[in-house]
Length: 265
Image 1 (cartoon, rainbow, N blue to C red):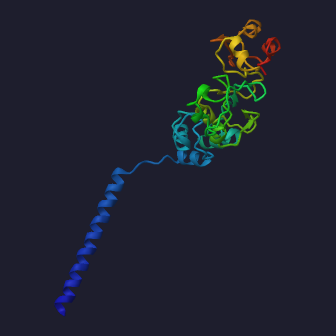
Image 2 (cartoon, rainbow, N blue to C red; image 1 turned 30 degrees about the vertical axis):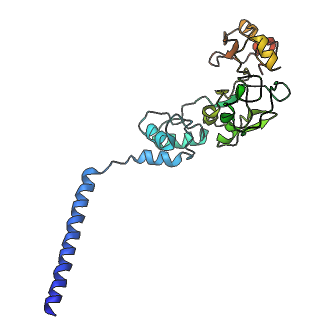
Image 3 (cartoon, rainbow, N blue to C red; image 1 turned 90 degrees about the vertical axis):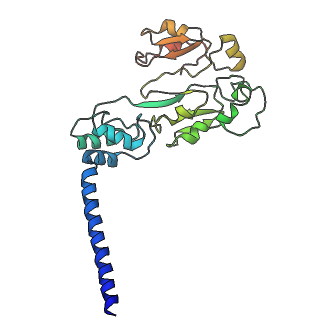
């Protein structure tokens, strides 16, 4: 019996000593390999909304928090949080908010069901990306036009897009310019423009004017009247399509008034 008790005590002592040794080794390793934590980075991350949309250009809110804490991104870099989040982060970083340009998405297509010509009846999956496997990427005669199946709407985390009369329409008040719709659209119809901009060319067709008119009543014919009459030189016509340079545009409205097909709205 005594031998059994001694054996138990020895086993207990060995286990105890082993535990102490492991604890000491772990403590030493933890101290040697510990990662320094930036308290500001943690605070900034907590202030961010957590949508992880990538609209800031960084890989989610964690990536943006790191960039802000390291001074690589402005405190107003989050397009979702807006002014309130920017001010909270500025207080954490001990800086002032640098005013940024608010952006919004716009779908460059006005080819509604009434205006766009349909070449056939589409019966496939209601997906813009899958429809690209069909002629013209969908039933519309315009190869460049909005398919209208709502891939962008499904991708928008802010419910800022609706499909109205066959085309996607962005609610600029809800839009946070995260860019997910831009990345999702297979026809590259969506772009981000300044929120304050009052004019946009609602067309993406690069066809010649005569072919545009055959496919849609609401397409840019590339006549160049808008470009010739813009006092700021803010419009260029490339590949039969007018496009506004918003860094030069002053919202004077000359382009809209001169457009013969009323595609600048």
